Amino acid sequence: MFAKKMGLIILIGVGVASFVASFGLSYVFGKKPDTPAGKQPVGAAVKDRSVVGKLSDDTFRKLNPSQEQMRELIAKLRSEKAEYQNRFRKLEEREKRLRIARDMLAKEAKDIEELRDKLVAPLLRLKELSAELEKSRVLIGTEERKNIKKTAAIYEKMDPTEGARIMENMCMNNQDDDVVRILYYMSERSAAQLLATMKTEGLAARLCDKLKRVREKGK
Image (cartoon, rainbow, N blue to C red; front, side, top):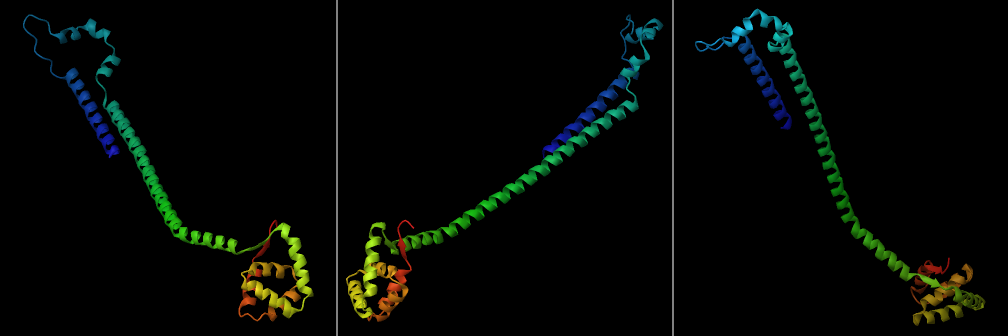
């Protein structure tokens, strides 16, 4: 729209220039206005040889622009018009590219927001599971590690049946974590014998599952 307005202004300028040139030509070479009686016409002074001698050819050429000068003027105006139109076309193309880039960025931002909304629930669930796993860990403190190792050594020397019975009673009193800590420091062979000897259904499997979550503090 702005380019069209500029083109219209340039065309009007060319028209005005043509009108002024035509008016100047008609003024110099056209019919002079009538002069009141008793007064010397203004044109008479120009016809005087002494005055005409003072006017150079260059002066007449300036008052009477040639067709070549008019063509050059029109060509210059047309060239400037074309240059302005070219600039405005480039500006319009640049604005179009910027608008496309802006739309693409807006779409990407929307997609990222939608993806974030989709990931919120899984991330929250993962955080909850991580918290639950951390709570389910069986931790062994640095200070109690030495005592638990001694207890584990005692159970390794016991008869597997007797050791399994004691551990089952401990589990009945909600001491599963203590049993798991002892089994953790026993040799694999001794721990396997105790677990295999347990008579409480599902207890050995539960203790084995907890053994996987034993962690020593500081390690």
